Image (tube, rainbow, N blue to C red; front, side, top):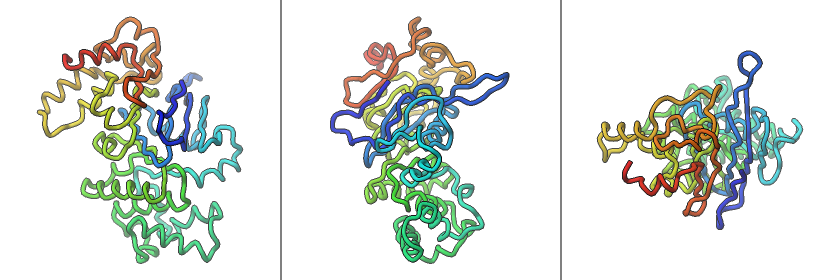
Length: 338
């Protein structure tokens, strides 16, 4: 199903439609990890992507960047269809789409100096002359809060937060249209996380970049995102404006996910009870996903239709808010009772 941005929403930088990805499994079979995923990311917009481990978030990020090939579907960056590009054409497009990785220590070459790390994308994409590149590197490092004294250091000489700033500088030095952030602060100390998140927000405003932001941390996603997409077993089950989605989630899974996050105003026992009511049991295997609605095996509101018919993303009464649930209206009407 095509998901169009709501009226007044920025024109999409990234448009994903019906994206499907599978991997080979035992006895010649294949496991479908992404199943018909569709969403957009607008100009200067941050779309947060949340869901339990194994739901397909990182696979989606890699498929969007065409680091892995998709089986079906469309991925367009500013109208350019990426899935049909030749290898040379795709290499040229990569200057416009970059990634900030989860582990800065693992994503930076320990043998290279910081200047060379940040300069490498400029050389690869032939941006600037040999004389101009050192200046571009220095300016980019300054934008992420690192002065010229860091240029000759190596990653091991830097703290985790400084290493991630280098990773952000490397991603943004080509002035991309889209940056995919895959858990960019999860490996950092809590005291450093806020600094890096504020930096990403400031750079979005300064450079006009759009983010696809993947995280397990719902508080981080709520604070940073304009819109949020919720994934379950390779499908998007709800997407909408961040504030609206967190204040009034419509899908039972989204409600369970939000209920499971620790809140200072509720007891741990009450939160656990609420989460268990809305998301009981274990996640099924992607190798043998449930028929119909994939959430029906855990959903306290499931009916016979849920077991046989896959729900499509339906618009709710809020602009830009969509949910894939057959009975979300009935569930929402008695939300205070459950």
